[in-house]
Image 1: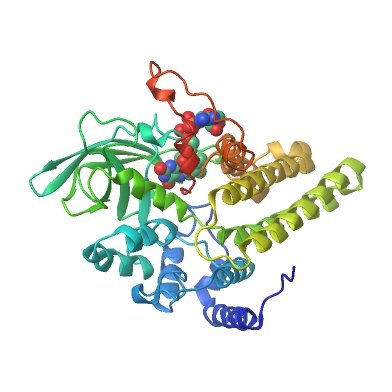
Image 2: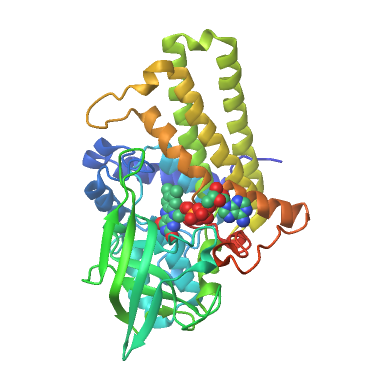
Length: 414
Ligand SMILES: Cc1cc2nc3c(=O)[nH]c(=O)nc-3n(C[C@H](O)[C@H](O)[C@H](O)COP(=O)(O)OP(=O)(O)OC[C@H]3O[C@@H](n4cnc5c(N)ncnc54)[C@H](O)[C@@H]3O)c2cc1C
């Protein structure tokens, strides 16, 4: 299979490179690839300004239809964009939830009014979103959502708790899965609501992670309000819409990941050269294996995305997620082994971490978010290998009933 760019794609790649070279200048160039997983707290203002530069120039929401301001970009073009973006060390994006998850959901399920109201501010980087799915008892088992919303005249009143809500501290709006039918159970009676964050009924509590940073939060809704028409799809039909959002998580970001991973691996290899561990046969094997596996990852992603338009199918997405998350977690462990005892010493107080320490700690999350490794394996075993479904636990233990079978479709969040 020929994995090189077609002539059209090569021209597109050239256009992307030239735009980035002309625009990633001044304070943006100085900021470099600031932010991203484990470092979301760094450089938010400059990243927001950059997001708006991208939006004004039409370099956000590439896959959206032209009608809604996108470019209707092919999968190959989206891959090229991601690859060049990371390779050029552009600042990490801040509008990913709106662009990648809510926007496509609204295009598919929103009313004309909702599309007109929300799509442009997302595309231009003027409104940021967060994802209010997970709760203390509803992670893999999303159908166990307990947050409630009731209609009070022309408004929904929302009460409950969300957790692990990434980037909520900067979000203007949250898309919330809430139970709107009293006494309903599991996936029935849920609705998909759009809730403004800046109001007295919404309280945030940042969660301090092992990295020392706080990228996600607990979000408490205590009588939070949103307009009656801020429901996507029909009231009570939120499960279908929630799953659609998850299906929009695409494989295109994976190549961006791959370039980023290659850069991290280079740092690990340089560290091994510097401290002499590269001479150790065991480290040499592990480093070579990491490099070879990363190359396989790249080729496999290119192969599976060739000629593909639209979201990648669930089983393939599960294999890709399982592969890259495990590889990245292992890279973090390899980095610590290469650094040896020095890995246990922070470069500065109170909790300053080197890039490799941060990589090690944050990559522990890779095998959890977006559907944990166990859940991905369940999908592979049931849908690809045709193995019997996992046993259901009797309904007397409601928190675990059908656990994972619901998550089977749940892989979109960051
Ligand atoms: C960095 C990060 C960012 C996140 N951002 C968001 C966000 O913005 N919005 C949001 O809504 N959520 C977010 N999440 C939450 C994420 O979706 C959940 O952590 C994930 O779905 C797992 O749920 P849980 O943490 O409740 O673990 P649980 O579901 O309680 O799982 C605990 C353990 O049991 C295993 N397990 C569960 N069910 C099964 C099963 N059926 N078979 C085998 N093993 C099983 C899991 O794999 C895991 O190891 C984020 C999480 C992380 C780590």
